[in-house]
Length: 88
Image (cartoon, rainbow, N blue to C red; front, side, top):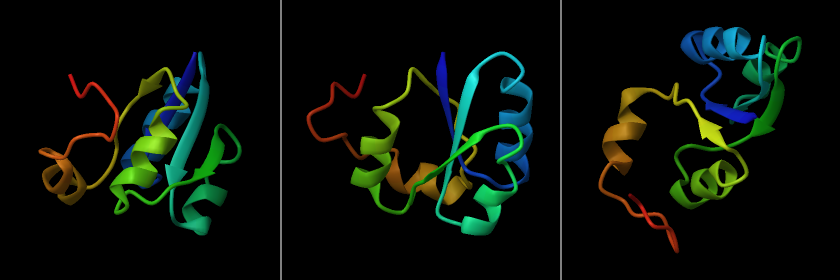
């Protein structure tokens, strides 16, 4: 299963490391330094969570998304709708 963990901070890194034992894991973040830190156990993917459309486009490539973004991103996007998506 192809899994995306948006957010390469401490929480995202721990989640990705754990999931990588059984799944193909990708970690999305805009920080090159944070993406370098996960390369031993996950695949890095450049993603900017502050750009809603970019985030949605990135997420569509995966079967499962396990969010590890700071709360401000969840609050800002909770009422937004994905373009062309079902949003359920």
